Amino acid sequence: VQLQASGGGLVQVGDSLRLSCAASGRISSMRFVMAWFRQAPGKGREFVAAVNLRGGSTRYEDSVKGRFTLSRDNAKNTVYLEMNNLKPEDTAVYYCAADSQLISSSWTNPHAYDYWGQGTQVTVSS
Image 1: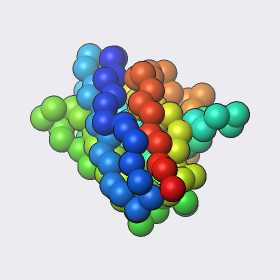
Image 2: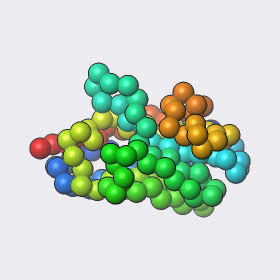
Image 3: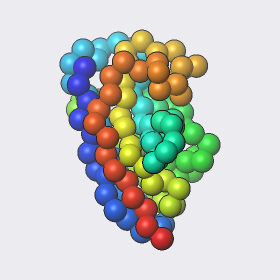
Image 4: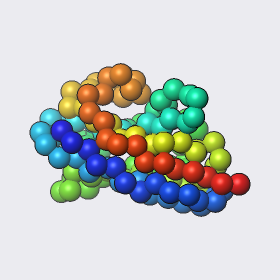
């Protein structure tokens, strides 16, 4: 499985940004999950949001609930992370991750994912 992430940039507080992650390869599993993690300087990799690509169920980290929304395009095997009302604390490198056999209790664990895309920088300036 290969992941191609895009969409980062420099924005102002309160602005919006959309990240995309396109998957290719063997992604037919009903438990195929795609997720976003982020890593700020000097910090560990933090779970942001995840979606079951086939069923559509989602999970969000508490600090982004109500501001970030995941959507998916199954025909393109692509997930989108719409980020609204961005805050300085959202500044980080965002990574797309995927795995074909994750159970829901593992979605927030970065070590559970087998596949990672390249990071994309999101900077929120105040």
